[in-house]
Length: 395
Picture 1 (cartoon, rainbow, N blue to C red):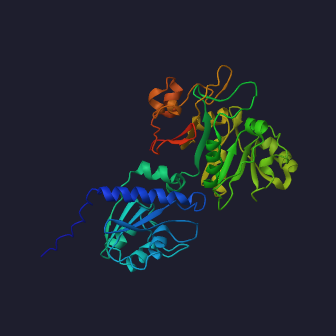
Picture 2: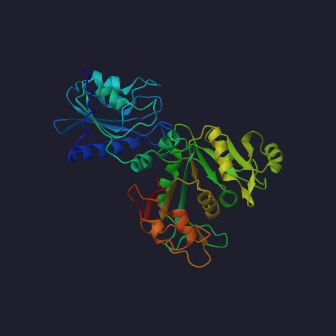
Picture 3: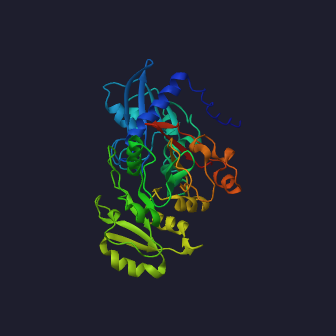
């Protein structure tokens, strides 16, 4: 007699209100790892028994305990509890033992996870636990939300490194600065503190020629978030004008800068900059440097994430080349007025500096092409009188 095939496990029941609350808390707790865990993802874990939270933890340091292990280690007895985690528990040994073994040893009764761990090698922790009698439910998030929470991690797993984020402070009339070369802060102190925090979570910080000539930025992470590895300053210099005295090349963070220029300028510029920077030659395209080729160079150097702090011209170049994965728009309640420097020189501006859907409100054909499908997956955040709106490219 032919044996009947085993039935697949039934789909998980919809998450309860408690499940949703605890998963949201796990995501929130995981964000404490910003700047300390990359290239690993930020992960949080919450342990619940009888409807009460009895432990929570986050992945605090690359190479250290994962969130699930850290949460369980804080308990004398976790038997019969439910473990909520923002990422599927790992079943492979890397710098630390598999989380699945710690979960099983703690006799956790149920595991609920928000995002699956990508990749055939890394994935499978949920199935491993199910096969050993642990109830596992998830994933309960959506792919867009998973990527928005840990974009560099998920995009690298999909072969799309480096992840590129673009940061701009924009006035109500779509300007990033007054005209005539004047310097002025559009945003307040609270926003500037957040701007100083963002580089802690990326591998490199990119600026264009006009920005380093006008501002001579340090391109470092400053403030409360201390990065495990300081971001590498990356400067564009098509004409080969940069000097070794640039503040970004002073090695304050112990990193060696990267300067992109043309093949014709590379040798001369390297001699001038000496040990302060690595000069890389990239092709020229339409009177500028080939940014896609630069990203390939950075990927070859192991970079999985880059934050662009350049001005409007660099921003539009990155957008036109379809290289931007995220926009950080700091919307300031000020009007620059006539003669200001537009955030997007071609007139294609994401109106979500004041609203949530850039593709729907933009009028020019280029704006529609550039911003169609972009979504705001993270809630807007107020910093003083300014508003940070984060937009991610659609799947």
